[in-house]
Length: 370
Image (cartoon, rainbow, N blue to C red; front, side, top):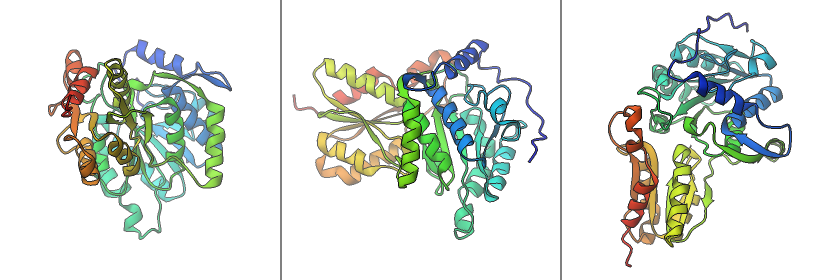
């Protein structure tokens, strides 16, 4: 199909030119092979390119994802490499973007669409809930919907409202959707490849403040592992990870809150307290086994998330752990989350977001006998 589509004229004005240039530089810095310093932005870009190279039915489209390469440059270079037939810009109409992707997925394609910012996806919510999540069930399994909706989400970038929402609970609540959120560079590559391979629709929540985080990663090794897993029919889908081992209490986090949890665990270690950190990675499906094994071992838990606490993913995690680990708990489970208010102005976001001090205060409140 020819993308005879009106493109938007410029990137969102709330992201500075300097930020865009930094992302572009980060996305092209990695070398061809071997362990290298790679950003999450580069890992996601590489995952998209590798998926498009491996499968001609994979298409990428959304606002400014073509020649510009996306506001955060995650799609940088895809149009020049694969052509405007396979990576192209769309009108500023999120409902139309997702609706078109539904039709494509119903007809054998594997669309990957980008919602430019978390709150920009709300105009597409009716399409996501009524069609994306329900098509497979509505057709009694006759139609699969292999599509990925990429959503840059969360705060920490100094953005104004409508640019820093943590909207994962809306999608997690909607039966029929998978919800993934990577926190590491390697998981960014691994989980996006698996999301694109999935025959089910995936909401792929990308922590935008981690786009420029770096780690030493062997991209060739990740490619080989992905190929081997596909051959064997295995994957990391739906599995949490132990990001740091510990014995005294468990910090349960996902997406943008994982580095904060790790920083809190490192600070606690200096005070003689051993905290285990669990990276949930997959909100739906949820890995009860790994999470609960940790809590049964430590007997105490704190759940950390940027989103509001009321009726949230953190609420669900607390409920699931309490139901399964009640007799192993030495104290009530605590939560450290964003406050139940609209996202604040940039100068106030550091008060709103979970931080090391708030996490350590919650840990101190876990009814230690000493």
